[in-house]
Image (cartoon, rainbow, N blue to C red; front, side):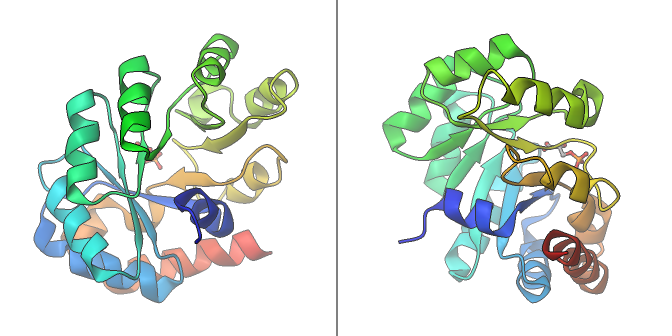
Length: 208
Ligand code: 3PG
């Protein structure tokens, strides 16, 4: 069976979603599937997140994760909603441990050597490098990869179609995350054409 991490590393982009109304989830799902990227991280920044995760997970044609997981109760709510993987902006031992109890993949955030080392101590091997662009970007990831050759990074935060190829060219970068394909306003206005187009364009860059 293909694991959520395999799906992420195969597609190489995680669309990061902030959604205001779960009623727009179906359109979002259609755009991602039509665009060829059946994967989404639904952030726990809005109250629509759990229902959106359930709606998308129930379709069966998308891998759905939960993002902005900052507490043990977020972990429980995301698992309950049907998330297949979890993403945190930072590093919390309580969150790492709760995810392990649920046996669900958690990709926590880290940007310094100390944070990466701590994550490795806690058994983490795939890290969200967040916020990527303001934390040193490509040069910082390259520098961290020297002492931590077994760690994979998913830079997120300021990644767009403009710098996607440069990030993916780093051997330690297995995927990137970003909201540019599924901007909040495009979801809210059900602009399926724009979302599909941006997704298709992004995948063209990945494959180039
Ligand atoms: C996240 O939570 O992963 C980020 O907000 C996504 O960053 P972006 O909006 O710059 O892509």
